[in-house]
Length: 245
Length: 245
Image (cartoon, rainbow over the protein chains, first blue to last red):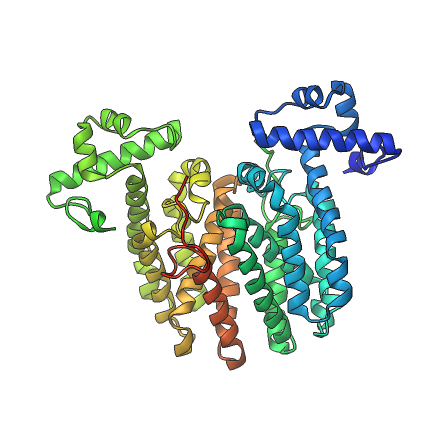
């Protein structure tokens, strides 16, 4: 993703350009929500934001990049939101539950959008999928949070699982996100309960990693995901990625 | 689902009515594929099938019931297709791989439809979801196949996991189905590879169930799914099912 790592597309070279970038992103999110992702054009986004089309393209190469910008922002907000609990708590279950619930808090305003947007993001071959190479930056940030969850917990993690567990924990967070998208309970109450139950189960699972006999299985589960999800790996089995349609 | 268990809605009271029912189902599947599920009416299905609207409703209460009829048919075809391998093979991995690949074979003609239909079936609260109470009949048939996979395998399964493992195996089959829906490789080659890898991993996991310390975790994973997926259980946490929109 060379473009996204160049200024100005990464963020705020100056406070002014940072504000324009944020304005375009807000406007895009609102229009995506109101009109749907497929029916919203860059031209309409620029118009609504009161900037020229050229200016919009200066900050974001296209609609897909706006979504990546949105993912990056959620990931950045999440990293800030979990600081306090990760600094204070040493119990693995409490750390993980806190991290998952903080994500649900942050994502709450976007629930309606997520429901609509789901059909674009569910396809693992789409650049809009959380598993795509294009989403790497946001995904790495999110996996980094799980790495912190483990690193600061009292539960000891064997060396050979230190790299794979955070990715598996992130994958199960993606399961929670999927559940949340379809959750219509008041305040997404069921998703919060699932976050707690999932955290409890994960903590127990990690504790079992002290049994050596289990470790190869954990590694193999991880290998299966990295071999079959695009973007999680450089080498896909079979013919490579097909063009997105 | 009282209606579906009454004749004529269950199937073929007479060869003639069985043929009419099958004709309506074929026609519906073709129209769903051509026009999309949402845009196809019972009236259009009846017209294309050359039967009266009343007659169409005599066999199927509505579009949702046509989908259930389709699920039931796939499940029935699958049960027949796996007979030979389940009678012959005693190795758990080979039994499971055979069962999963037989499903991919049977589902192949419906791939295009599945891609389209996904947005209706992905919502676990929709009656069209494989997790819904409405899909119970097809789900039970599919879980029954996994029960046979285990029962006839050389690998010994502890009593306390005999009920939960087939359901977990079916859940992982749903993961394969999700992967298959988005698989655009020639002949869904990647899905077939995933079926094999998944079978290998499951067989290793089941073999580890001989370690008593693991069993509570397996039971808890199962409990988590049954508590949070509608239709998998009678009691949902929090406020019950919301009306489908």
